Image 1 (cartoon, one colour):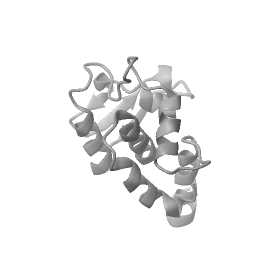
Image 2 (cartoon, one colour; image 1 turned 180 degrees about the vertical axis):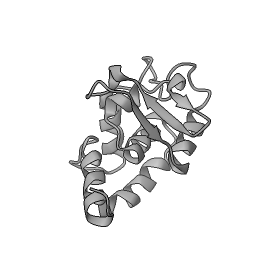
Image 3 (cartoon, rainbow, N blue to C red; image 1 turned 120 degrees about the horizontal axis):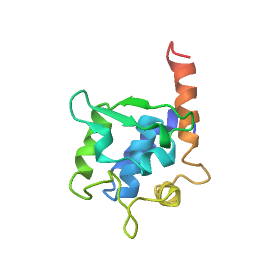
Image 4 (cartoon, helix red, strand yellow; image 1 turned 120 degrees about the vertical axis):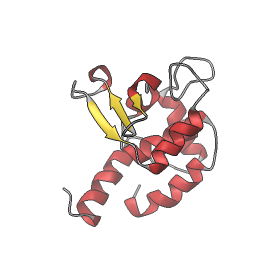
Length: 134
C-alpha cells in the first residue's frame, strides 16, 4: 500500500475492536512481521519505557528486537488488557491469532490485494521518501 494511504487505512482498521483488527493496527504501527505480533506475550511488554521486547525465538534475525511503543501502539496494548493472561492478541479458538486472521482483517478493512507484510515496505518507503532516515 502506498505509504500516503496507510494513515486513512489504519483509522479504518483501528475503529474495529476485534483482536485481529487491533493486531493488524499494531503490526502497521510497529512495522512488525505477522508472527512477531501474533505471538506477542504480556511478559514482553514493559510498562516502564513503553517497550516491546521481541525475543530471539520469534525474530527472523535470531536477535532480540526492542520496539518502542508510541501512544497509538500503547493504546492498542491497553485495549487488549484482560483478554488473555499470556498473549496480547489471543485467538478465539487457539492461544494466538494466526497469520490468516491478520490477512482476513486486512481484507475486511478494505485492504484489497495488499498483504500484511507489505506494511513493512510501506514503512520503509515512508522512511526513505518522507524523512531523513534511510
